Amino acid sequence: MSTHGQAPPSHTRGRRTLPWGRLLWAGALLVLALLLRGFVVQPHHIVTGSMEPTLAVGDRLVVDKLSYRLHPPRAGDVVVFEPPPELVRSGDLRGHSSIKRVIALPGQEVRVHDGQVFVDGRPLHEPYVAKAPTYEWGPARVPEDMLFVLGDNRNGSSDSHVWGALPMRSVTGRAWLRFWPPARVGAL
Image (cartoon, rainbow, N blue to C red; front, top):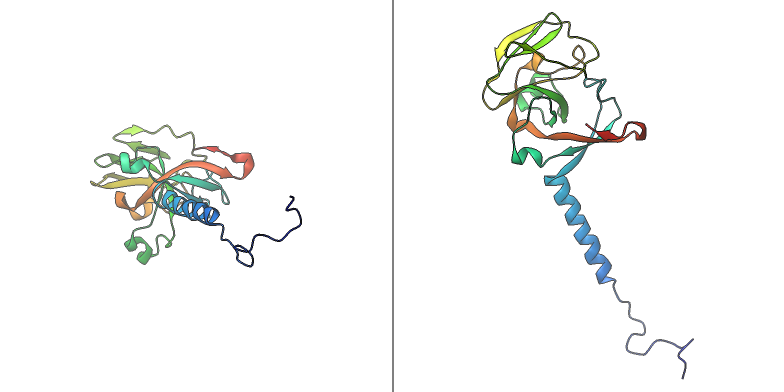
């Protein structure tokens, strides 16, 4: 006997079944996304020209938040950080996350002289800088638990040459991948 075209059995008639499987999957995906964003990766949007030509206004990045739980930042890393409260209060940095390149680590001596950055007396090779700095700075030794960071746009960046060393505790992650715009997609 065919049941085609007949009403459902009386025990389910008029009752809606909830798609529990779909709800559980959606909930699990939401929890996973929140955990990933909180502890592993986060997006970052470039809003200033301080890292040009490496990063341009409008670039969108993936920030790796896990690496620095395993090891400290290294010289040359491009780091994302939350400005320390004293820099926000002083007006040197706005209250949103910023991005700069690590130039020197704790205990190293930094000097900017005659358009060149020196670390421990040796000039840095910086192919990512379009224009040499026009300012003089230092020499000064980077304190413990601090980093000396500069924007790649040496003359258009509020960075350690303006406000001093950055506390390592302020670093939230390492710029890892540019995903927008499509023509500039790639690892950093």
